Length: 485
Length: 99
Image (tube, rainbow over all chains, first blue to last red; front, side, top):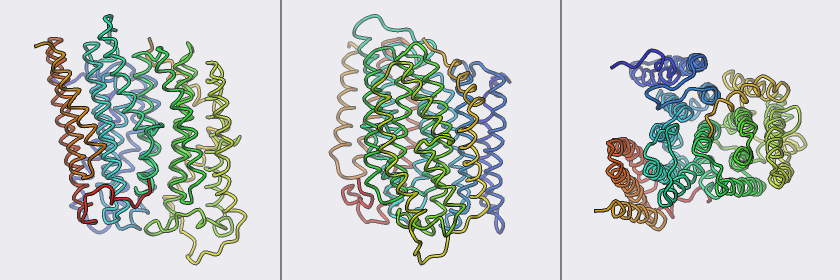
């Protein structure tokens, strides 16, 4: 009855994450006094251990649990990204939760459970497993989005996220049902392709519905409407998590489905093409008009989903799939670090009840808090894609993949969008560096935990921008390990 | 009965769910529309399982039911919090965040 030892080892990160989440919820009621430090330490330890234990799946590739999970370089790469995000978010949340007086163990448990879901999505080789992973991560994030329970904005964010997220899930699920009907199995590796025209139509329809469901999750146009509202209303550390983790996992799932089921059909390619172009423009043009930093970063994350879709379209268009897939993976790592850094920074600068979230509230920050301002400027420049920062190399690889697949127009649109994006990123930097401060409130403190998270994100941004070799080699290996058709 | 009847019914139910989601204004009704969509999927799973002669289709339904129950628990909790803070469940009045 008991699953083989190897299978358990392959699932080690998920097991550790779940157990530490459950442990947190169990011991929290018995703690009093110095509980905060203990809870945060336990949660950080859990996610850190999970990150370390990824060594097991990394050294034991193969399928696990009768083919439900596929542990390969691809899933390990996404595992590491997602677990690192969870680790940093947990440490970066502690001071925010203290300030908002919502310091509870459930928060960390939910972050851990959401991470379990994302990990399962990354490794799923069967569609119902993918569905369960998707829902584990989604349901946990619905709760986290509404975690400031007494704040109407947070309630509203949770409601919108919940309604639109479940709506998208229903589409995804209907897609699975149709795919099951068309191919007779939900295991990606065993799918045989239908020959009768009726079943072929079923397959196309099913794939389309799944694509719609996942497009909601990655906030690709025309399904991106929920993103700014949800990101703005949610507690900022949760926004940091939502913008980086689930997005990486959903992209991983999308890649795996497209790679196995075959994106060779021209229709899927054009759907990705149009969605990529639309997403970039919608995100960037709307971001220019924003006065709230959090909302601006939300729109910027839509545009970044568009950039990643360009790489996805490149992977779908050519025979050298690995070039596009490696670009997607590299960008996911780059994007997760810089976006997480930017949001965690904003969560600290926003002050109590997130009062100071307008771009104007950042004026003269370079005089008031030079180091912090430099750090935020670094993340913004990386999001923009300036050389030396990781954002540049990430975009370069996407550009490269697009050109290799002869998607000249998409590459041109990507370049145009980078120029548009310069407006709003540079505006914040100008406000920070060239305006005189006249705020009446004291500078925001930078507790060590936040400083730690920001330094890791900044160091990672430089590392991925200057020494891409190692990580890119891993991404390429991961791309090659993805079973194709 | 041919399988296509079940599939047609499932598609109609799913469509009704989508219409309800788009046009209804009360959060609870919108939520019920989503449940309708999930149940339409259940019907499709069972119909396909029958057509393929596999038990899997029916097993999947249990997964869906469990997930839908978890979703309902979270969704209703969110609805209660909103009802307490706002005294209204009309989505048009919940508009602090501009769309």
